[in-house]
Image (tube, rainbow over all chains, first blue to last red; front, side, top):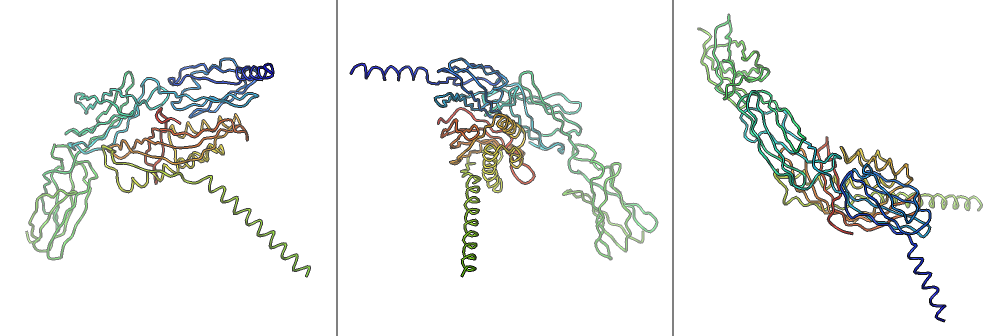
Length: 285
Length: 179
């Protein structure tokens, strides 16, 4: 009777000792090779399913399976499966990002008016060499170098792989370099700072045969930067014939237009939301 | 009488075919159902989320999961073009390419997502989110199920705006919730 009980128990113990098993480290770093140990014996199939891969290979159950670092480039959850004659068994593990060594930099906008407070948004995403987002806090150095000016920098610590700053644009127009740096890696974007809205817009009028030639002084913003050619200036004339508005682009720094005048006329000028001086002219002069 | 019988048989056959087509169609629709996404943007910053964006994000994220699940099940990388971009699309396409090589595919039963916005860029050009996803996953070698498990997963997600929708640019599972 004892023998009858003992034999199946021994068989069960031996069978469980030979059953397929698979063990992997709970966590590893992206790009690092690991070894996955298996139990059991005989021919088996090993599967490794990751965020960007799904591989299958024949193995011998009971041996260790080497997984190369380049099979573990992507951070995330991996499933290792071993299928043998007695069925399939699996384990899962996480691949964490490697050391931070790259930045993705978003700078917006690409053109900004001078003197705009918090006008430039800069966001840095922290990656490792395999483009995995590094979630552990990392110090990021942001810098701004205006044209012909000195670099100004500020440090921010990333949270969940992101760091950001808002930067005010300088008073001088020109290309400004916006940079972010982590370790040996840096990224630079160029933002073109352009003149802001016109400031102290002034016009003068002179007789040109039957008409008046109305012309602005050189159009500049409040910091003295020339407002770019092509910016529209609106001249409005009000006389006995009614109200007429002419839109003229700035050319070589000034905007000018010839206007016929009937009797007394009032001429005003505007560019965007900025208005300038008014002129009173007469057709008889 | 024979003619009546013949017409009756034809009508019955036709009805059976219609029913079969409807059943198949319903089955296909169920597989491609948009998962439920519960969205929370209470703690997002520095930019405040716009009303339209708070509707677009969960809708587009749900569509992204729907297409991803279908793509991984049917090994159709082209399905990813609609709602994925950048490294997320590249990685998932690589996964599908290797699934095809190994004759593998993955079947998902999506039990829903709790999506939390944690960062919205000042210029509105990127949003980072955390997703607590509940999915039942099966991995199949041909038609043989080699792995199945109900999972509670946490993902870190970056979405960026496209022409008419938000696209998943980065989706990375992080250690957090356990099965």
